[in-house]
Structure formats: C-alpha cells, structure tokens
Length: 291
Ligand code: C2E
Ligand code: MG
Ligand code: MG
Ligand code: MG
Image (cartoon, rainbow, N blue to C red; front, side):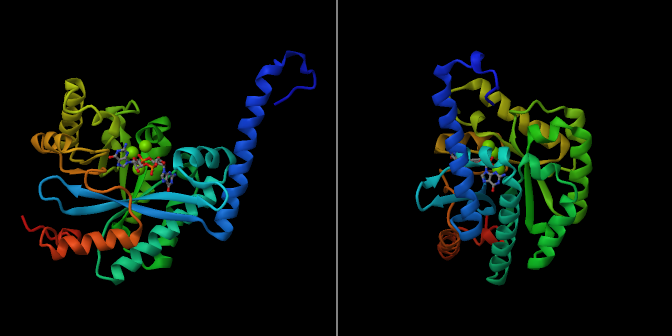
C-alpha cells in the first residue's frame, strides 16, 4: 500500500509490514501447491454424549503439512486463505473430502454424522445449497449425515441473508450448527427464526470451569436457552474431568474436547471407535446406546 508520495510512510514500519506480506505470499503460494499436489488432510474430533460416553458425531478439522514449512495450524492459514479468496477452492476440497470419507464409513457400516466448518466467504457464495446437494449426491451420501457449522457471528452479521441461506441448506436435509456460540452477540429474535439444530458453546466459557462461577452461570444460561428453543448443544474444549462433571450436573447433552480425544486421522478414529465397541462401552458410534 505504498503511496507514490512516500514521505508519510514511516520507514521503521516497513520491514515488519513487508515481512507480513512475504509471509502471506509464501503461505498463499504453498497453499495453492497443496491444493494441486496434496498436503491437506481432514482430521475428525469426536462429539460425545455426556451421559454415556457414546460418540454421536465428529467435527472435520483441516490439517495442512507443507514439505518446506512443516505443519501449519488453521489459525495461521485460514485467515490468509480468507483474505486471498483461496478459501473457496479450499472449502470445496474440504466438503468433497468429508463426503468421500462419510461414504467410506457408511460402506464400512459406520453411520457417523460429520460436521464441516464453512468460512464466511463460502457461506455468502450464491448457490451454496445446490453445491452442497451436488457434492452429497456425487458421493452418494445421505444429507442427514452432514452438518454444516457457521459461527454465531456469521449468522448475526446479515440475519436476512443468513436465514435465507440456512433455510436453503436445511431444505436439502443437512443440519446446521452455530459454532463458537456465546462470543457473537446473538439476537434471540434472530436465533429463534434460524433453522439451526445445534449450538456449540465456545471453549472460552469452559476454560475456567469450575473456578469461574460467572462462566458457569453463562453455560447454564445457554443450556436453558437451548432447551427453550429446542436446540441441541455441544460444549467445546473440554479438557478435564471437572469440566465434564460440571456439564453432567447441568445436563449438557454433548461435548467435544481433548479429554475424550483431539481431532484424529480417519484410521485412528475408526480404530478408537471399534476398540470401544469391542470393549462394550459403545456400540454408541452406531447410535445404539447401551446405557
Ligand atoms: P472451531 O471450528 O471452533 O474448531 C475447534 C478448535 O478447537 C479446533 O482447532 C480444535 O482442534 C480445538 N480443540 C478441540 N478440543 C480442544 C480442547 O479440549 N482444548 C483446546 N484448547 N482446543 C480444542 P483447530 O483444528 O486448530 O481449528 C481452529 C479453527 O480453524 C476452527 O475452530 C475453525 O474456525 C477453523 N477451521 C478448521 N478447519 C476448518 C475448515 O475445514 N474450514 C474452515 N473454514 N475453517 C476451519
Ligand atoms: Mg467448528
Ligand atoms: Mg468452535
Ligand atoms: Mg473457533
């Protein structure tokens, strides 16, 4: 953004700025390379029934390992992809890969709901619902097995557009979850009208539980709201037994977090699920709870 008249550009900011631009250009270049030649993968984090430990679904999380740069976390490359428009081909790749995996699991007798994150640009893309339908049909996957996650802020930025798009998606038979719930200033009037099945309580609210009693009250508040609106809930970022115990006591239906498992490669997830089924703890992956 250098102006022709460079006098007002303080020289001391230039190196940091150009470094940031180099970094962005390099990530963009390498990401394009990954889209073309490989290096992307989806890992899957279980969503677990609080009462009986059964796996009720998984969230697909994008992983990228570059031969030169190593493993790069989504927090670093998703914003770059958003800014450059690369998020659209990247989002396509994620949707296809999730549906390919879904189909492979179904063929193995594993009927797991898979949740896929949608970026703001994807969500604003005209024809999104038709695209989702085509990808599902292309892989022969039942729409009910696919969930789409948008953040609460995405839903609230332009409620009219959000409602239209979410309704079109829901008409295709996929379910919708509101991600990072509690961080995005929801209008309850809007929330009431959105065809959203699930609220995902942001992990910042779980982080200091049980010590932080205010956060505890907030979590209970979201649960009460969800019960009133008949929405399901997943609590994110459950790392220790005390947090799970808290969720059990306030009758939160489901959770996701390192306590149970991080996002796992598909083979590791399948192994973990069949291990638990064999151990008798959960034919739960199939939705038939023993307890
Ligand atoms: P998110 O959708 O809210 O995903 C949850 C994040 O929390 C994931 O980080 C997950 O690994 C992490 N997490 C899970 N359990 C725990 C826990 O117990 N403790 C802590 N501290 N963290 C936990 P990840 O995989 O690094 O992804 C970060 C964000 O990047 C995601 O947040 C999502 O916004 C975005 N993202 C990831 N994959 C995709 C994708 O395929 N498409 C798009 N558009 N965004 C994605
Ligand atoms: Mg998510
Ligand atoms: Mg989240
Ligand atoms: Mg998040």
